[in-house]
Image 1 (tube, rainbow, N blue to C red):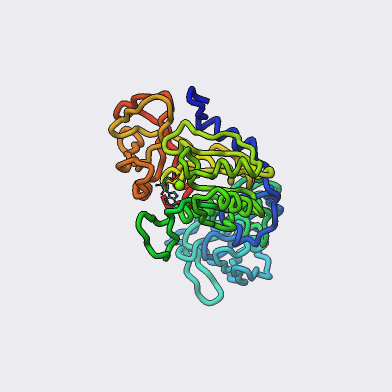
Image 2 (cartoon, protein in one colour; image 1 turned 60 degrees about the horizontal axis):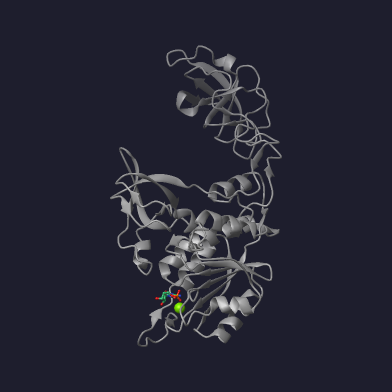
Length: 413
Ligand code: AMP
Ligand code: MG
């Protein structure tokens, strides 16, 4: 906690994570498990590939039979059968014999190598082999990809396209993953216009309902409801109580500050919520509140569109991932901050930046005006540069800590 009673971001994250518990798992059909967090270890029960197979179209042979074969002196073998993908040959290969084989087909018993079709000539029941092959050539061994008994995916892994492919290749039609945390979103403000609602003087469009709900979905949540409530304490209290009803997490945007029309904290207090912190030593994000209501995590995020997104990424996103059992500490890295940065001591700053690779390493360039209402600054950003609270000056091209945004935005940053 700093002198003004604001809590440092890292301490805030720790307090949030301490207040959470992991949700139980449920079984998902493979294709609906994209982006979910595994709630079981996956062990290969059988080797993959499951059998020795051919890497090429050609002829299965005994390497010893074709020793010394060359264009000028082909070795002639008798063709005795065919092994196709999914249709193994019935024959066993004997001395001086070949079996035609397709990529992915089982190596017939008796054969130990494959000659590529390009290095053969076929005529009437026979095949001329134009090059010698070593034993094992063009043969994919059983278990080369995954051996039986290997743990190929661990509980806590996030399932992307490659993971779904591996699960399918191991024969999993279903997989046990963490349930999607159910999030209720509440945005506050008399000035807010829903999409399609007629404009009126002083009103603005509600963007948080959409950007924050999308962030929640990108973090694996199911958004139960997204409600708008005016700046009225009674209505706010009723809306929070309703939002908390079936949710695993409540996220409220706006009305968190000290203005005469900010009613969220008083409403939370009246409902018996327990405050963990209010006031973050971070810009944007200063009036952020976190606590629990009936044991469920509640975030009170600032209403400014950039502040809401930034605080969600830094606090609520990690919370949702933790509730699904994903390990913490996703890839923070560093980059050189273009132009440097001066600021007063006291609060950390989160700058929207665009990353680029240059000869002297990775650079982060701020995306323009950094006001917490400048939502367009999020468009070009693919990272947040985190300038610590006590830092007053970052020299041009000095290294700063970077939180990549793509993982929080479904890869869309
Ligand atoms: P507040 O945190 O309620 O004081 O709001 C801070 C600023 O964010 C004000 O300019 C609000 O109009 C704006 N704001 C609050 N909620 C939203 C929202 N859902 N969408 C867009 N802007 C908002
Ligand atoms: Mg407001």
